[in-house]
Amino acid sequence: MTIYCVTGVSVDIPADTLEGMNVDYQELHRALLEQAVAPHSSLVQANLRGAFLSQAVFDYSDFQQANLITANLDQASLVACTLQGCKAQYCNFTRANLQGAVLDGADVTGANFTEARLQGASLLGTTLDQANFHGAVYDSHTRWPSGFNPAIVGAYKSLD
Image (tube, rainbow, N blue to C red; front, side, top):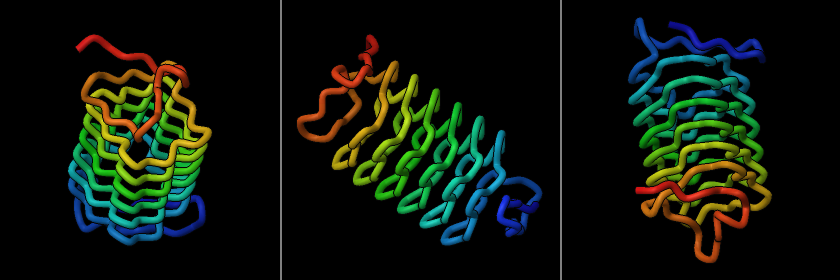
């Protein structure tokens, strides 16, 4: 299997499927992974800057310290993903499912979480400057940085 990037780079995956792939530390700048089905994958410190990941399924995947700056994760499924310490400035998480995801220590400055599902997610120590949470849904299990009020930025609490 091969992952192609707009930049002309390609990365071969030694498997017939993307599920469970390991692309730790790989250069995947502007990767073309729209609608990819790749749960249980490892993308630790991968460079996915500007990657096209809309409608992709990455449930239970590890994105620790990955570069997701300006990546498009519109309608992506990131259930229970680890995104600790990732750089996701101006990333598009519109309508993404981030239930149970861990974004502790991530930088999501200017990221778009419009209508994202954040139930049970942890955003402790996360940099949320200028992030858009209009219509995002959270619950009593969602963890926010100290002093952050999600209702003020347009998110609403679901009934548990």
